[in-house]
Image 1 (cartoon, rainbow over the protein chains, first blue to last red):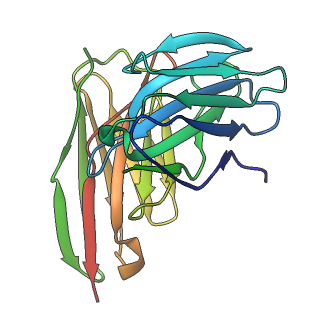
Image 2: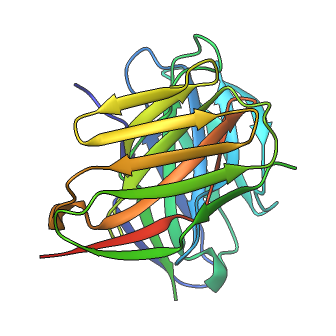
Image 3: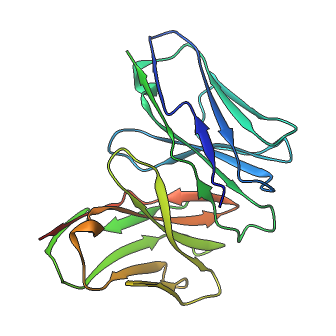
Length: 114
Length: 110
């Protein structure tokens, strides 16, 4: 079965650079979520989209932005990168059949800021 | 604000033991609760999902229970194996997004 695809798997950037992370949800899933997991920490919710509109917002810095496109894939854009942005970034998708649906996670993008 | 707590933070057991991981949450207004497994530096693998109206779910050697009124869930692992070594995370679905606990790091010794 198709899973959530994230790219790239690994990304190394320098401070103050910009990064773009991509997420391709499971087919027919129209809701996408982004999470950030710092070293030794639990995943923290950043932002979510439903039908290309932002549906909820968590602890996402103003330096970050995201969007969902017409094919339902999503991109997380990160600017003015800081050392503290180094983390594992997960994307998850779910079918909008109600909030009881399980979230399916991708394997994550590991971002290292040097 | 919803807070999810997992106890213990780390657990080491010999192979073959049955064990219980605990998860508690402060706000019982949840849609469901998911248990995940995470290997070091890897993604999140969903193990079990319990809807708010359910009491337990079983998959193989895993059994998860939910007591929504008391804000508790347990993950029971029977006959543990070294391959079960990983971090186990519980997460409650509130308003469509997941709020995670900090995980229990499990080590099963051969």
